[in-house]
Amino acid sequence: MKLTEEQQRWLDGEAGPSIQWAMSFNEALGHFFDAPHMVAVSSAHFAPDLRMMGEIGVKLLQRLVSENARTKVPSYLDPCTVDFSRAAELIASYGLTEEFVEQDRNLFRLCRELGFLPTNTCINYQTVTPPRFGEHLAWGDTGTAVSANSIFGARTNFEGGPSALASALIGMTPAYGLHLDENRIANQLIRITCDPSEIAEWGAIAAWAGQIATGYETVPVFYGDFAPPTLNMLKHLGVALASYGGHAMFHVVGATPEAPTLQAACAGHIPGDEHVCTRADIEKVFSRTQLDQTSVDIVVFAAPQLSIDEVSDVLNGLKGRRLPDNTKLILAIDPQVKAPAEHASISDELYRRGAELSSGTCFYQEAPLMREQTGWRTVVTNSAKLVNTLSSAGYVSAFRRLEDCLNAATTGRLSS
Image 1 (cartoon, rainbow, N blue to C red):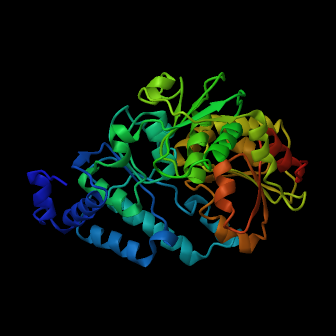
Image 2 (cartoon, rainbow, N blue to C red):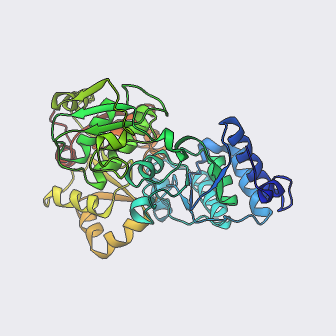
């Protein structure tokens, strides 16, 4: 990989040990992927997770802080495991230990000292700053990355924790993968023969399509005679494709910027094999997730976090109904949505109906920690990604449309 004179000086340690570590890590990453050079990034997105990074990761952050390292570009934080505004409640009622809460708080503090912004979001493209077409990024959350690539036409790979951290410190990342034109071309053709009308249906399409050909190199293009999907629909399509298929990019003809036409999405070479997604295929995705009992412990709207209009849709869908005592309704939001929800009294209305807003988290991080203390087993959600994620955490989950989820929340039972 060709380095500039400045990059070589950084690699040699002339800018200090922190920059040398960051440059060395990304140089090795670029060498592994045969990157020809580095590209400057406009921002970074870092997903610190205590259980994944362990003691070694925390020690790395501590060392960087002790060396007075600072982020070079705007750098965002992914959701925490703990909603610190509800820490006492989480300890008393949901099984989180004081030690774990303090460890997560310390992790957050270390990131702030390095210069990361306290966004605690997996939808920074929606609630903080939307990326510009063609700009290079170093984003670490799979949902943020697939959305940046697909919905906005920006360029990023699925950055691991160390590479996102390194890129934040030096403001650049190796030019491989989806930073390169040739890897962004659609190579899987999917025709949709129905008209998906809500975010859960687009999540179902992703769950169906994501398993046709799993892998980072698969870039599907969706087309057909349907109404253009909204931003919320596209983000659920993206996060579920990343979850079920490991895909980091997709196109929707007429709805995403690199697919004004099918020809453009495929760079003039339309794949010969076509996969067809029907209404029946979507319904099969919903029907294949069933509870082993009719009673519902929790209904969760998360993965990704909700935008303000999604929160409003949940409130409107409740139609004045309250939750029974034995069922929880949890909405995961980021701090950027929390403020307008409180200002518009949406939060107060949801609280009055028995719902909970979890700010700065996305539920699936704390879900395994909560299960033993609460005894929760059954979950209903409109997030295809969340169903896939919770499958390893001991929950029995049902994936349903918004209205079905709200009916389950207000009756405590899943009718079908």
